[in-house]
Each structure stands twice: as structure tokens, then as C-alpha cells.
Length: 312
Image (cartoon, rainbow, N blue to C red; front, side, top):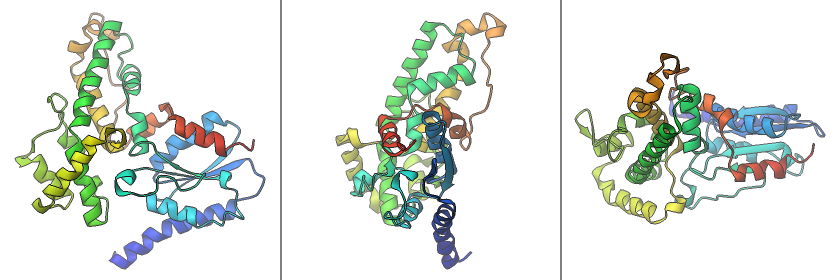
């Protein structure tokens, strides 16, 4: 497909989403339309809405990216359509650092952290998955407490040492005018047993060289990357790791604990009945599908839904 055809396809997605909603929309229905960036987002936001408002009907649409979601939003005349019936959900991404608006309208929800996946990454979710998916529920309290400590220790190492990679990603976004994060195989960059969690090299190539290659950067970008990295370190309250990277960290840590289960939960091996086992496999593509219904939504999302879905 040539460049013109690619742009045509991209533009078609929001046009189709808006057309479907306008065709189905009827005044007075107990129905909300939600538009998200991707299909995984729908599983999260759709489940939160269903749990809070069990009687409401939901029509789900994903537009294929933040810009497309906002284009769908702009396709509606809000003098005609009810804002609280059409809800839009987008990730914050680097908005704070690039000076983009972090408030658009009352019916547009923007995540508190980098992306919606960040809401799934915390010690409570980690322990729930370890117990329910990996069979650690019968471990002793002391063993589970020790595993919690391991999570906190490794998360701090992951978070604190992520600033260079995230700075490189931001500079790449700005220079290349496209999001190349998907080109970075983050699982190759993480090693849980390392003190820093991040690797120094990948198949003979330094981690920095790997990032430069995947993010289409050159050594001329180094000074700007370091400047941004220092900004991240100086304003931690507004610094977040990319959600998909954080999710990969959590899955790798789960696998690490599982692979070393005899060391972390020896009590489970006294009786073979208690022996932990993987009840399902968490893959990079499928993890959020399984975790989405389990996520405890942040207060901002609860307030957003309460403020909008108030017509029942």
C-alpha cells in the first residue's frame, strides 16, 4: 500500500466509528457509546461500566489510536448529541511533557498515568495473579510477604532505571512524528535477576544501540535524551513508565517467581497437592484481556463515569 493509501485507511477508521454511532444513536435510550484507542481498552472500560451500571447497554468502538479517538469526538455536534451518552477514552502518553492538553471535555477521559495498562500494574494485582493463576494461594503468610517485598524491590529498580529508555522514546516521537515504541521488544531489555532489572546488552549490541536502532535515533540525540531524562528524574510525580512496558515487567516477574517457586514458597512442595502450576499462560498480547476485568479503577475514572452516566 502506498503512503496515500495508508493515510486514507487511517482516516477511514474514525469516520466509520462516527458513522456507526450516528446511525444507531437514539435520544432517550439507556445506552452509552464508548470509543477507545484499541480493542484491549474496550475490555477494561467496558467491564468497569458494566460493574457500576449493570442495567445499561454499551456500544463499543475502537478507533485505532489516540488521534483517531479525538477525531471521532470532533465529528459530533454537541448541540445535537448528548455528551454523557458518548464517552471517549484516551491515554495520557507524554501529554504533560509535550505541553498537550490534559483536559479536553467532560466526556473525554484521559488516564492518570501513561496509559490504561498502568492501572493493572501494582502489587495487589501481582499477588492476586500469583495466587489465582499460578497456584500460590496456599503459600504461608511469611512467604507471600517476602514475595511482596521482592515485587517492591524489583519495581523500584525497574521504575528508577527506566528514565533513559522513556526519554529516548519521547525524543523519537518528536523527531520521527510517529510512535515506534511497538518496535522495541521490551522483554529483551528486562532481566529480573539483575540489580537494575534492565539489561546492558542484547545479542552483542548495547541496550543504547538497540534503542537507537528501533526508535530511529542517532548519537546526535544523546544530549537531548539526557536532558529529558533529567527532567523525568526531577519531576517524578508526573513521570510514568509506558504502560505496556510496565505490564511486561510484571509478567516477567511473575514468571521469575514461578520459575523459582521452591525458593520463594518451599511450603508448597511439602505436599504435592499444593505444588504451584500455571493455570493459564500470560502472553504479551493476551495478558490485558485476562486482567482487564480484575483491575480496580482509579478514583478519576470512577468520578468520570459517575458524572456522565447519571441518567438511569
